[in-house]
Length: 305
Image (tube, rainbow, N blue to C red; front, side, top):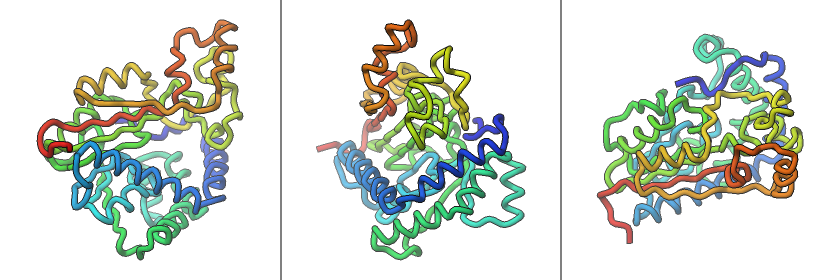
């Protein structure tokens, strides 16, 4: 599996954009943490609905928990939660750790890690998380295992629930990851996958769009006239909506999914581009939707009420 990040744009350009994004992330940390906790609670409710039972004292796996690890920490208060990541983020940075990151993951990962530490993004986020949850930090241990989502380092039937947010679009072989999730789930176990769709306006992962949706023309990465303006900061498999749906039907038979549609770009923006002869190879559905949410309950085990 390829690294989440790739370093083909130069350290200086990536550093400037990442630092700008991190500064934005630290402007209102309480609100960001509250938003992430709302998402965590919604996710748990959906998993419980699928299971037909509360998600308590369960084994829960998150693929690619990232650096803030809010879902893991919050869910781990009442469950045995573990994350698996191809590039686990260190809690502390020393010279040996900096060298390890550079040697194994390249300069861009080093820039990202140092930037977050320098601005205190993760430290401040976790402090706010413990405040909002009303628990001391020592009661929120986080277990992260280094591993590949396409070859999970766990035995069959190890987990009651598996979740993944904005990971599948970065995998070389998402179909293998879907099969691995099915393998490590216990009968009656449940899964939820959230993918950031490549065909969305922000699908190229140009960090300027994460700070300002109007920083680039609509769907710039999909149009011949504007593609050269786009600077992706990560490896993307460029899967489309149909690719995901076909794969999940193969590996998660009977799954359900839904799309999250953004207000911008609007349908009027898309209609104008179509009149101009652009974006003809894409459906309205896959262009307007930014996120695909897929959920599944593995047959057997608990019977949903």
